Amino acid sequence: MDFEIRVLITTFFISVVCGLIIIPILKKLKVGQIERNDGPASHLKKQGTPTMGGIIMIIAIIISVTCTYILMNTLGKLDIARKLLPLLLITIGFGMIGFIDDFKKLVLKNTEGLKPLYKMVGLLIIAVSYVLFLIYGLKIGTETYIPILKTYINIPVFLYIPLAIIVILGTTNAINLTDGIDGLSSSVSAIIITCLTVISIRNQIYEVSIFGSIVIGATLGFLMFNIHPSKVFMGDTGSLMLGGVISGLALYLKMPLLLLVIAIIPVLETLSVIIQVAYFKKTGNRIFKMAPLHHHFELSGWRENKVVVIFSLITLVMSFIGLNII
Image 1 (cartoon, rainbow, N blue to C red):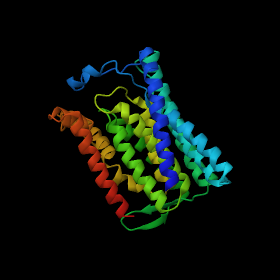
Image 2: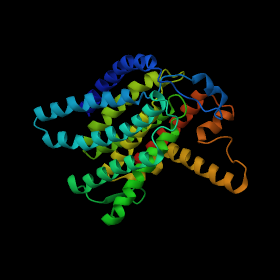
Image 3: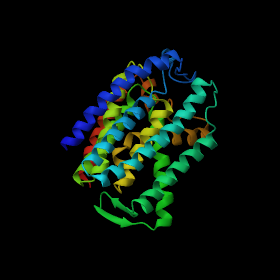
Image 4: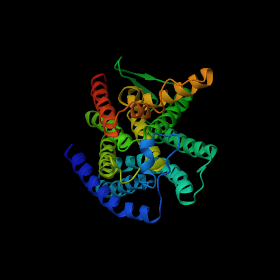
C-alpha cells in the first residue's frame, strides 16, 4: 500500500510537469478544440482551447511504468515487472489510436479524422491482442466474477473472447462519450480506476495495484489543467486511453461485470445516446434535450461544475457499493 501511494504521488508530479511543458507546445501548434455548432452555446467560448492533452497522461504513465519496471527488476520482483507490460501496451495502443484521430483532425486539419472503419479495426486489433495475451500469455483463464452472487463462473473460451472484446470496445466508447465537459471524464475515470485499484490491493494483485496507482496519479495531474475553466482537453487521445485502462484492469481482475455498477455514469451516457437516436428515428422527437446525458443537464440549467460534482459523487457512491458486493 505504501509503495502504491508513493508511485501515485510521484506520477502525479510527473504529470503536472508534463502538462506545464506540453500545453504551451499545443498552443504554439494551434491544436485547438473545434466546438460543434449544434452543441451547447456555452461551449462556443471553448473554441481554440488546446486539446489532444491525453498525451500528458500517456507520457507520465510511460515514464512512471519504465522507472517502476527498472526498480522491480532491481528488487528481484521480475514477475510483477513483466506483468506491467501488457497493461502498458493496451494503454499506449488505445492512446495511439486516439492520437492519430486527433492529429489528423487538429494538426492536419482533416475534419474526418481517422476513418471510422480504420479506427474500429485498430481498436479491435489491440483488444483482441490483449484478450489473447491474458488467456494464453498470462494464463489467467476465463473465470468471470459475478458480483451479487459473489462467485466465479467459467465461460467457454469461444464465448469469453468475443465478450471480453465487447467489454473493451464498449468501455472505450463509453468513456469517450463521457468526455464533453471540463473535468468530467478525468474525474469519473480516476474514481473508477481507484475502485479497481483498491480491489487489486485487497486481492494482492500487485501489478494491477501498481499500474492503477500510476494511472490515477497521471489522471489527477492532468485534472489540474482540465478542471473548469479547462486549460486543455484530453481529446480522443486521453478518452480512448482511459477506456482501455479501465476495461483492461477489469478484465485482468476477472470483474468486467462490476463495470455495470462502478462505471454507471459512462453506461448512462452511452444509453442516453442509444435511446435518443432510436427514439428520434422512430418518432422524430427527442427524449433528452441533447445527448450524451451531461449535455441534457447543461441545457436544463446546470453549470458544468455542478454536472461534474454530481456525476463524480454518483460514481463514488457506486464504487463504494461495488466494493461491498464483491
